[in-house]
Length: 427
Image (cartoon, rainbow, N blue to C red; front, side, top):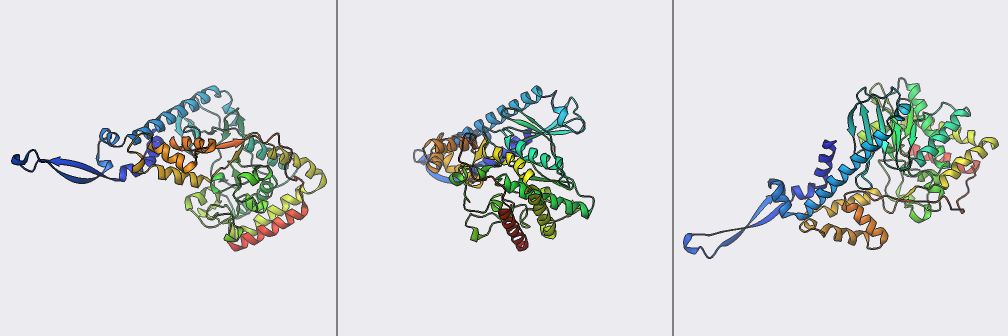
Protein backbone atom coordinates (compact mmCIF):
# COMPACT_ATOMS: atom_id res chain seq x y z
CA UNK A 1 0.00 0.00 0.00
CA UNK A 2 2.76 2.42 0.94
CA UNK A 3 4.52 1.69 -2.34
CA UNK A 4 1.44 2.81 -4.30
CA UNK A 5 1.25 6.03 -2.28
CA UNK A 6 4.93 6.73 -2.92
CA UNK A 7 4.46 6.11 -6.65
CA UNK A 8 1.50 8.47 -6.80
CA UNK A 9 3.37 11.18 -4.89
CA UNK A 10 6.34 10.86 -7.24
CA UNK A 11 3.99 11.35 -10.19
CA UNK A 12 2.24 14.44 -8.84
CA UNK A 13 5.53 16.01 -7.69
CA UNK A 14 7.58 15.02 -10.73
CA UNK A 15 7.54 18.49 -12.32
CA UNK A 16 8.56 20.20 -9.08
CA UNK A 17 11.28 17.69 -8.22
CA UNK A 18 12.94 17.82 -11.62
CA UNK A 19 12.72 21.58 -12.18
CA UNK A 20 15.68 23.90 -11.94
CA UNK A 21 15.44 26.43 -9.14
CA UNK A 22 17.06 29.86 -9.37
CA UNK A 23 18.29 30.61 -5.87
CA UNK A 24 19.81 33.96 -4.93
CA UNK A 25 23.05 33.77 -2.98
CA UNK A 26 25.06 36.64 -1.55
CA UNK A 27 28.63 36.80 -0.38
CA UNK A 28 31.19 39.42 0.54
CA UNK A 29 33.86 39.76 -2.12
CA UNK A 30 36.43 40.72 0.46
CA UNK A 31 36.67 41.88 4.01
CA UNK A 32 37.35 45.40 2.72
CA UNK A 33 34.06 45.45 0.84
CA UNK A 34 32.02 43.73 3.50
CA UNK A 35 29.17 46.21 3.17
CA UNK A 36 28.81 45.67 -0.59
CA UNK A 37 27.66 42.07 -1.04
CA UNK A 38 27.39 40.64 -4.56
CA UNK A 39 24.50 38.47 -5.78
CA UNK A 40 24.85 35.44 -8.00
CA UNK A 41 22.31 32.94 -9.35
CA UNK A 42 22.63 29.25 -8.59
CA UNK A 43 20.71 26.77 -10.73
CA UNK A 44 19.99 23.59 -8.77
CA UNK A 45 17.41 20.81 -9.04
CA UNK A 46 14.64 20.78 -6.46
CA UNK A 47 15.41 17.12 -5.78
CA UNK A 48 18.80 18.21 -4.39
CA UNK A 49 17.10 19.97 -1.49
CA UNK A 50 16.10 18.37 1.78
CA UNK A 51 12.37 17.84 2.28
CA UNK A 52 12.19 20.79 4.67
CA UNK A 53 14.06 23.05 2.23
CA UNK A 54 11.87 21.87 -0.65
CA UNK A 55 8.63 22.66 1.19
CA UNK A 56 9.99 25.99 2.41
CA UNK A 57 10.87 27.02 -1.12
CA UNK A 58 7.62 25.63 -2.57
CA UNK A 59 4.77 25.94 -0.02
CA UNK A 60 2.29 24.84 -2.67
CA UNK A 61 4.05 21.47 -2.92
CA UNK A 62 3.50 20.89 0.79
CA UNK A 63 -0.16 21.67 0.22
CA UNK A 64 -0.32 18.93 -2.42
CA UNK A 65 1.47 16.36 -0.28
CA UNK A 66 -0.71 17.07 2.76
CA UNK A 67 -3.91 16.63 0.74
CA UNK A 68 -2.79 13.52 -1.14
CA UNK A 69 -1.55 11.72 1.99
CA UNK A 70 -4.61 12.74 3.99
CA UNK A 71 -7.04 11.57 1.30
CA UNK A 72 -5.10 8.37 0.66
CA UNK A 73 -5.06 7.47 4.36
CA UNK A 74 -8.78 8.19 4.69
CA UNK A 75 -9.59 6.08 1.62
CA UNK A 76 -7.65 3.10 3.01
CA UNK A 77 -9.40 3.41 6.37
CA UNK A 78 -12.76 3.34 4.60
CA UNK A 79 -11.72 0.28 2.58
CA UNK A 80 -10.54 -1.62 5.65
CA UNK A 81 -13.67 -0.77 7.65
CA UNK A 82 -15.84 -2.01 4.76
CA UNK A 83 -13.74 -5.15 4.50
CA UNK A 84 -14.31 -5.84 8.18
CA UNK A 85 -18.04 -5.14 7.85
CA UNK A 86 -18.46 -7.56 4.94
CA UNK A 87 -16.10 -10.37 6.01
CA UNK A 88 -18.95 -12.83 6.59
CA UNK A 89 -20.36 -12.30 3.09
CA UNK A 90 -17.16 -12.22 1.04
CA UNK A 91 -16.59 -16.03 1.06
CA UNK A 92 -19.75 -16.27 -1.08
CA UNK A 93 -17.96 -14.70 -4.07
CA UNK A 94 -14.43 -16.09 -3.59
CA UNK A 95 -13.88 -19.31 -5.48
CA UNK A 96 -11.33 -20.94 -3.14
CA UNK A 97 -12.77 -19.56 0.06
CA UNK A 98 -11.30 -16.78 2.15
CA UNK A 99 -8.67 -17.09 4.85
CA UNK A 100 -8.78 -14.89 7.92
CA UNK A 101 -5.57 -12.97 7.25
CA UNK A 102 -5.15 -10.27 4.63
CA UNK A 103 -1.76 -10.72 2.97
CA UNK A 104 -1.67 -7.89 0.47
CA UNK A 105 -3.71 -4.84 -0.52
CA UNK A 106 -3.20 -3.28 -3.97
CA UNK A 107 -4.90 0.10 -4.36
CA UNK A 108 -4.51 2.55 -7.24
CA UNK A 109 -5.97 0.28 -9.96
CA UNK A 110 -8.18 3.00 -11.41
CA UNK A 111 -8.30 6.77 -11.71
CA UNK A 112 -8.50 8.34 -8.23
CA UNK A 113 -11.97 9.76 -7.55
CA UNK A 114 -13.73 11.26 -4.54
CA UNK A 115 -10.70 12.09 -2.41
CA UNK A 116 -8.34 9.34 -3.46
CA UNK A 117 -10.66 6.34 -3.69
CA UNK A 118 -9.56 3.76 -6.27
CA UNK A 119 -10.30 0.22 -7.35
CA UNK A 120 -8.37 -2.11 -5.04
CA UNK A 121 -7.51 -5.82 -4.97
CA UNK A 122 -7.45 -7.52 -1.55
CA UNK A 123 -5.43 -10.74 -1.38
CA UNK A 124 -5.70 -13.22 1.50
CA UNK A 125 -3.05 -15.52 2.90
CA UNK A 126 -4.43 -18.56 1.03
CA UNK A 127 -3.99 -16.74 -2.29
CA UNK A 128 -7.66 -15.91 -2.88
CA UNK A 129 -8.47 -12.39 -4.07
CA UNK A 130 -11.44 -10.05 -4.28
CA UNK A 131 -11.90 -6.70 -6.03
CA UNK A 132 -13.23 -3.63 -4.22
CA UNK A 133 -14.83 -0.81 -6.23
CA UNK A 134 -15.83 2.39 -4.40
CA UNK A 135 -18.96 3.17 -6.44
CA UNK A 136 -22.43 1.64 -7.00
CA UNK A 137 -22.53 -1.46 -9.26
CA UNK A 138 -25.74 -0.62 -11.11
CA UNK A 139 -24.14 -0.96 -14.56
CA UNK A 140 -22.42 -4.27 -13.74
CA UNK A 141 -25.63 -5.68 -12.29
CA UNK A 142 -27.61 -4.92 -15.48
CA UNK A 143 -24.84 -6.19 -17.79
CA UNK A 144 -24.23 -9.51 -16.07
CA UNK A 145 -27.97 -10.07 -15.53
CA UNK A 146 -28.46 -9.70 -19.30
CA UNK A 147 -25.64 -12.18 -20.04
CA UNK A 148 -27.01 -14.63 -17.46
CA UNK A 149 -30.44 -14.33 -19.09
CA UNK A 150 -28.87 -15.30 -22.44
CA UNK A 151 -27.09 -18.25 -20.81
CA UNK A 152 -30.32 -19.52 -19.24
CA UNK A 153 -32.16 -19.36 -22.57
CA UNK A 154 -29.64 -21.50 -24.33
CA UNK A 155 -27.36 -19.07 -26.11
CA UNK A 156 -23.95 -20.63 -26.47
CA UNK A 157 -21.15 -20.83 -25.88
CA UNK A 158 -22.16 -19.46 -22.49
CA UNK A 159 -20.72 -16.30 -20.94
CA UNK A 160 -18.72 -16.16 -17.70
CA UNK A 161 -20.60 -14.33 -14.91
CA UNK A 162 -18.52 -12.91 -12.01
CA UNK A 163 -20.12 -12.78 -8.58
CA UNK A 164 -21.02 -9.42 -6.98
CA UNK A 165 -21.83 -8.16 -3.51
CA UNK A 166 -23.58 -4.82 -3.84
CA UNK A 167 -23.67 -2.08 -1.22
CA UNK A 168 -25.17 1.39 -1.52
CA UNK A 169 -21.98 3.25 -2.44
CA UNK A 170 -19.51 0.42 -3.19
CA UNK A 171 -19.35 -3.22 -4.17
CA UNK A 172 -17.16 -6.31 -4.16
CA UNK A 173 -16.51 -8.40 -7.28
CA UNK A 174 -14.98 -11.83 -7.61
CA UNK A 175 -11.46 -11.59 -8.98
CA UNK A 176 -11.23 -12.20 -12.75
CA UNK A 177 -7.85 -13.74 -13.45
CA UNK A 178 -6.05 -13.21 -16.75
CA UNK A 179 -5.46 -16.71 -18.14
CA UNK A 180 -4.36 -18.13 -21.48
CA UNK A 181 -6.39 -20.32 -23.82
CA UNK A 182 -5.80 -24.07 -24.08
CA UNK A 183 -6.35 -24.38 -27.83
CA UNK A 184 -6.95 -22.41 -31.03
CA UNK A 185 -10.60 -23.48 -30.83
CA UNK A 186 -10.76 -21.82 -27.42
CA UNK A 187 -9.39 -18.60 -28.98
CA UNK A 188 -12.11 -18.79 -31.64
CA UNK A 189 -14.75 -19.20 -28.93
CA UNK A 190 -13.23 -16.22 -27.11
CA UNK A 191 -13.71 -13.96 -30.13
CA UNK A 192 -17.17 -15.42 -30.85
CA UNK A 193 -18.20 -14.45 -27.33
CA UNK A 194 -16.65 -11.01 -27.74
CA UNK A 195 -18.58 -10.47 -30.97
CA UNK A 196 -21.78 -11.54 -29.23
CA UNK A 197 -21.08 -9.15 -26.35
CA UNK A 198 -20.52 -6.36 -28.88
CA UNK A 199 -24.13 -6.83 -30.02
CA UNK A 200 -25.33 -6.82 -26.40
CA UNK A 201 -23.25 -3.70 -25.70
CA UNK A 202 -24.90 -1.84 -28.58
CA UNK A 203 -28.39 -2.88 -27.47
CA UNK A 204 -27.71 -1.77 -23.88
CA UNK A 205 -26.31 1.61 -24.96
CA UNK A 206 -22.75 1.05 -23.71
CA UNK A 207 -20.03 3.61 -24.43
CA UNK A 208 -16.29 3.88 -23.70
CA UNK A 209 -15.59 0.14 -23.58
CA UNK A 210 -11.85 0.58 -24.07
CA UNK A 211 -9.23 -2.11 -23.53
CA UNK A 212 -8.61 -1.46 -19.86
CA UNK A 213 -12.25 -2.38 -19.14
CA UNK A 214 -11.79 -5.97 -20.34
CA UNK A 215 -9.93 -9.01 -18.99
CA UNK A 216 -9.13 -12.05 -21.13
CA UNK A 217 -9.77 -14.95 -18.76
CA UNK A 218 -9.15 -18.15 -20.70
CA UNK A 219 -11.73 -18.30 -23.49
CA UNK A 220 -13.87 -15.62 -21.85
CA UNK A 221 -13.69 -11.85 -22.52
CA UNK A 222 -14.99 -10.31 -19.28
CA UNK A 223 -16.15 -6.70 -19.04
CA UNK A 224 -15.05 -5.54 -15.59
CA UNK A 225 -16.17 -1.91 -15.79
CA UNK A 226 -19.74 -1.20 -16.94
CA UNK A 227 -20.00 2.33 -15.58
CA UNK A 228 -20.99 3.80 -18.97
CA UNK A 229 -23.71 1.23 -19.69
CA UNK A 230 -26.91 2.93 -20.86
CA UNK A 231 -25.28 6.23 -21.73
CA UNK A 232 -26.16 5.98 -25.44
CA UNK A 233 -29.81 5.23 -24.55
CA UNK A 234 -30.27 8.06 -22.08
CA UNK A 235 -31.33 11.63 -22.67
CA UNK A 236 -27.81 12.62 -21.58
CA UNK A 237 -26.21 11.24 -24.75
CA UNK A 238 -26.61 14.43 -26.78
CA UNK A 239 -25.85 16.69 -23.81
CA UNK A 240 -22.62 15.12 -22.64
CA UNK A 241 -21.40 12.86 -25.46
CA UNK A 242 -18.45 13.85 -27.62
CA UNK A 243 -19.82 11.62 -30.42
CA UNK A 244 -23.61 11.90 -30.34
CA UNK A 245 -23.88 11.58 -34.14
CA UNK A 246 -22.06 8.21 -34.27
CA UNK A 247 -23.73 4.91 -35.06
CA UNK A 248 -24.64 3.06 -31.79
CA UNK A 249 -22.08 0.31 -32.49
CA UNK A 250 -19.27 2.84 -32.88
CA UNK A 251 -20.30 4.54 -29.64
CA UNK A 252 -19.44 1.38 -27.72
CA UNK A 253 -15.71 2.12 -28.11
CA UNK A 254 -14.99 -1.42 -29.25
CA UNK A 255 -13.87 -0.25 -32.70
CA UNK A 256 -11.35 2.41 -33.73
CA UNK A 257 -12.65 5.66 -35.17
CA UNK A 258 -11.34 7.40 -38.26
CA UNK A 259 -11.09 11.11 -39.02
CA UNK A 260 -14.19 10.75 -41.18
CA UNK A 261 -16.19 9.93 -38.05
CA UNK A 262 -15.56 13.46 -36.70
CA UNK A 263 -15.63 12.21 -33.14
CA UNK A 264 -12.07 12.82 -32.00
CA UNK A 265 -9.10 10.47 -31.75
CA UNK A 266 -9.94 6.93 -30.68
CA UNK A 267 -7.23 4.59 -31.88
CA UNK A 268 -4.88 2.29 -30.02
CA UNK A 269 -7.34 1.82 -27.13
CA UNK A 270 -10.29 0.08 -28.84
CA UNK A 271 -10.37 -3.69 -28.09
CA UNK A 272 -10.87 -4.62 -31.76
CA UNK A 273 -8.00 -2.36 -32.85
CA UNK A 274 -4.63 -4.08 -33.38
CA UNK A 275 -2.56 -1.00 -32.49
CA UNK A 276 -1.61 0.18 -29.01
CA UNK A 277 0.38 -0.61 -25.89
CA UNK A 278 1.50 -4.21 -25.44
CA UNK A 279 0.68 -4.32 -21.71
CA UNK A 280 -2.94 -3.33 -22.34
CA UNK A 281 -3.20 -5.74 -25.26
CA UNK A 282 -2.00 -8.65 -23.18
CA UNK A 283 -4.64 -8.15 -20.51
CA UNK A 284 -7.64 -7.95 -22.86
CA UNK A 285 -6.58 -10.20 -25.78
CA UNK A 286 -6.33 -13.99 -25.53
CA UNK A 287 -3.01 -15.78 -25.30
CA UNK A 288 -2.32 -19.26 -26.65
CA UNK A 289 1.01 -21.04 -26.28
CA UNK A 290 2.58 -17.84 -24.96
CA UNK A 291 1.57 -15.95 -28.10
CA UNK A 292 -0.83 -13.04 -28.24
CA UNK A 293 -3.78 -13.79 -30.55
CA UNK A 294 -4.74 -10.51 -32.19
CA UNK A 295 -8.34 -9.74 -33.25
CA UNK A 296 -7.55 -9.24 -36.96
CA UNK A 297 -6.92 -13.01 -37.26
CA UNK A 298 -10.38 -13.78 -35.90
CA UNK A 299 -12.59 -11.33 -37.76
CA UNK A 300 -14.90 -14.12 -38.90
CA UNK A 301 -15.39 -15.36 -35.31
CA UNK A 302 -16.18 -11.85 -34.07
CA UNK A 303 -18.70 -11.27 -36.85
CA UNK A 304 -20.22 -14.72 -36.37
CA UNK A 305 -20.74 -14.06 -32.65
CA UNK A 306 -22.25 -10.63 -33.32
CA UNK A 307 -24.70 -12.04 -35.87
CA UNK A 308 -25.59 -15.03 -33.68
CA UNK A 309 -26.42 -12.79 -30.71
CA UNK A 310 -28.71 -10.34 -32.49
CA UNK A 311 -30.39 -13.15 -34.45
CA UNK A 312 -31.02 -14.96 -31.16
CA UNK A 313 -32.52 -11.82 -29.61
CA UNK A 314 -34.63 -10.77 -32.60
CA UNK A 315 -37.12 -13.58 -32.19
CA UNK A 316 -40.37 -11.99 -30.87
CA UNK A 317 -40.56 -13.80 -27.52
CA UNK A 318 -36.92 -13.15 -26.61
CA UNK A 319 -36.93 -9.58 -27.92
CA UNK A 320 -39.72 -8.47 -25.60
CA UNK A 321 -38.07 -10.00 -22.55
CA UNK A 322 -34.59 -8.67 -23.35
CA UNK A 323 -35.85 -5.13 -23.78
CA UNK A 324 -36.39 -4.93 -20.02
CA UNK A 325 -32.60 -4.78 -19.65
CA UNK A 326 -32.41 -1.91 -22.13
CA UNK A 327 -35.16 -0.14 -20.18
CA UNK A 328 -33.15 -0.55 -16.96
CA UNK A 329 -30.04 0.75 -18.72
CA UNK A 330 -31.84 3.88 -19.94
CA UNK A 331 -33.31 4.64 -16.49
CA UNK A 332 -30.21 4.38 -14.33
CA UNK A 333 -29.93 6.21 -11.03
CA UNK A 334 -26.13 6.49 -11.06
CA UNK A 335 -25.25 7.07 -14.70
CA UNK A 336 -21.80 8.55 -15.09
CA UNK A 337 -21.59 11.61 -17.33
CA UNK A 338 -18.35 12.88 -18.81
CA UNK A 339 -18.01 16.65 -18.68
CA UNK A 340 -14.56 16.20 -20.25
CA UNK A 341 -12.57 13.21 -21.38
CA UNK A 342 -10.32 11.74 -18.65
CA UNK A 343 -7.29 12.51 -20.83
CA UNK A 344 -8.23 16.20 -20.73
CA UNK A 345 -8.50 16.12 -16.95
CA UNK A 346 -5.06 14.56 -16.69
CA UNK A 347 -3.68 17.24 -19.00
CA UNK A 348 -5.09 20.02 -16.80
CA UNK A 349 -3.81 18.25 -13.68
CA UNK A 350 -0.31 17.91 -15.13
CA UNK A 351 -0.26 21.58 -16.14
CA UNK A 352 -1.29 22.63 -12.63
CA UNK A 353 1.61 20.71 -11.08
CA UNK A 354 4.26 22.86 -12.71
CA UNK A 355 6.72 24.75 -10.54
CA UNK A 356 5.17 28.17 -11.12
CA UNK A 357 1.93 27.13 -9.37
CA UNK A 358 3.66 25.81 -6.24
CA UNK A 359 5.49 28.94 -5.12
CA UNK A 360 2.61 30.13 -2.94
CA UNK A 361 -0.28 28.40 -1.22
CA UNK A 362 -3.50 28.76 -3.19
CA UNK A 363 -1.84 29.36 -6.58
CA UNK A 364 -2.88 25.98 -7.98
CA UNK A 365 -6.51 26.50 -7.07
CA UNK A 366 -6.63 29.85 -8.85
CA UNK A 367 -5.03 28.31 -11.92
CA UNK A 368 -7.47 25.38 -11.90
CA UNK A 369 -10.44 27.72 -11.57
CA UNK A 370 -9.19 29.67 -14.58
CA UNK A 371 -8.92 26.44 -16.62
CA UNK A 372 -12.16 24.82 -15.47
CA UNK A 373 -14.35 27.87 -14.95
CA UNK A 374 -15.85 29.47 -11.86
CA UNK A 375 -19.39 28.17 -12.24
CA UNK A 376 -20.63 25.30 -10.06
CA UNK A 377 -19.36 22.57 -12.38
CA UNK A 378 -15.99 24.23 -12.93
CA UNK A 379 -15.53 24.79 -9.19
CA UNK A 380 -16.25 21.11 -8.50
CA UNK A 381 -13.77 20.10 -11.20
CA UNK A 382 -11.11 22.46 -9.85
CA UNK A 383 -11.51 21.25 -6.25
CA UNK A 384 -11.26 17.62 -7.33
CA UNK A 385 -8.12 18.27 -9.41
CA UNK A 386 -6.70 20.28 -6.51
CA UNK A 387 -6.71 17.01 -4.56
CA UNK A 388 -5.07 15.26 -7.55
CA UNK A 389 -8.27 13.33 -8.29
CA UNK A 390 -10.16 12.97 -11.56
CA UNK A 391 -13.61 14.59 -11.31
CA UNK A 392 -16.49 12.15 -11.46
CA UNK A 393 -20.08 13.22 -12.11
CA UNK A 394 -23.21 11.07 -12.10
CA UNK A 395 -26.81 11.87 -12.91
CA UNK A 396 -30.10 10.23 -12.03
CA UNK A 397 -32.04 9.56 -15.24
CA UNK A 398 -34.51 7.07 -13.72
CA UNK A 399 -37.38 9.57 -13.88
CA UNK A 400 -36.84 10.40 -17.56
CA UNK A 401 -39.71 9.45 -19.84
CA UNK A 402 -38.43 10.55 -23.23
CA UNK A 403 -35.80 7.88 -23.81
CA UNK A 404 -34.90 6.62 -27.26
CA UNK A 405 -36.65 3.73 -28.96
CA UNK A 406 -35.50 0.53 -27.27
CA UNK A 407 -36.98 -1.93 -29.77
CA UNK A 408 -34.43 -4.30 -31.28
CA UNK A 409 -34.56 -3.59 -35.00
CA UNK A 410 -33.44 -6.37 -37.35
CA UNK A 411 -32.64 -3.77 -40.01
CA UNK A 412 -30.49 -1.75 -37.61
CA UNK A 413 -28.57 -4.83 -36.47
CA UNK A 414 -27.96 -5.92 -40.06
CA UNK A 415 -26.50 -2.47 -40.69
CA UNK A 416 -24.38 -2.82 -37.53
CA UNK A 417 -23.02 -6.14 -38.78
CA UNK A 418 -21.97 -4.47 -42.04
CA UNK A 419 -20.20 -1.68 -40.13
CA UNK A 420 -18.46 -4.24 -37.90
CA UNK A 421 -17.26 -6.23 -40.92
CA UNK A 422 -15.96 -3.10 -42.66
CA UNK A 423 -14.10 -1.81 -39.57
CA UNK A 424 -12.53 -5.19 -38.83
CA UNK A 425 -11.33 -5.42 -42.43
CA UNK A 426 -9.40 -2.14 -42.02
CA UNK A 427 -7.23 -3.51 -39.20
